Image (cartoon, rainbow over all chains, first blue to last red; front, side, top):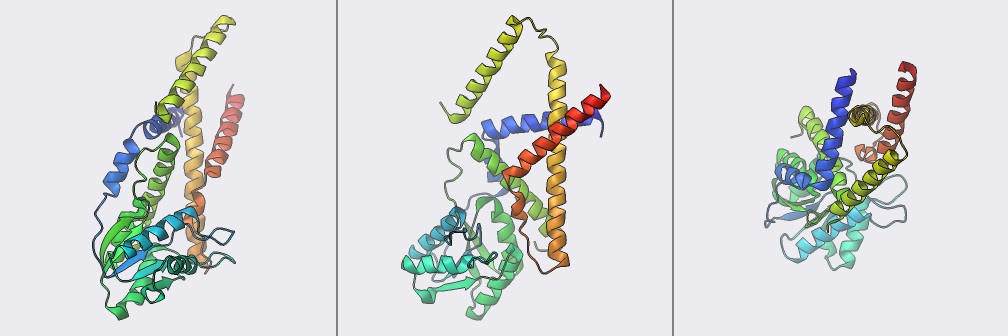
Length: 205
Length: 102
């Protein structure tokens, strides 16, 4: 690659860094790629796996946030069923099982909780949760998912036959970000764009 | 004052201080444009390494997934260490190339 091209790439990187870290550009980008939408009543709340189980056996911060958001929505009566997803990693327990334990401890009846602990990807979660909910004739779901992944997850679940509304697993996270948060968010958006492209190529969306 | 503004002010002041110190010590401070060109080339080299590392990493993740029953999460690549490694690769490669050409 020519030196001028490399210099242009470097200049873009540096300008991009300043735009991302010190302006609200990434917030605008996030709003464009994953617009906020109000929660809607559904037949089941589905909390997608994210972050997994920490080496100590507890949920990671990201997983805990999503689980608590799902429990909050359940307790507010947005849906009568709570589906908790999350596979096992290595010798650790499945994220879904740890989540279900927490939900029961926080007062969600065991009869209202379903778990899926075998799916590693959003596509597998969509198929696995369809298999779980189909016998109950559940079509309308409220999907709890991190903001950058909202559109891809929503489309992947719609593709397998669900009517999907979404709720962010980290509501309010976009407010008062510092530069490091914004850089992290840009990285998440980049990963999400790559995942979206892959899902398109594979025909999952 | 937001944290972003504070960081910019701090970095601006130390840059200014270093520039003034250089001037006082009699170092020729002309050629800032050429220096910026070098910085852009270095940043570009680091960016290229980062993109190559992420692309290769994704390829390995997808390859392992499709060729075996073993699952590797693509989110393993979402790690700041990869950025630091790319930075080191970029700096070493850039300096090495400069030494060879100059």
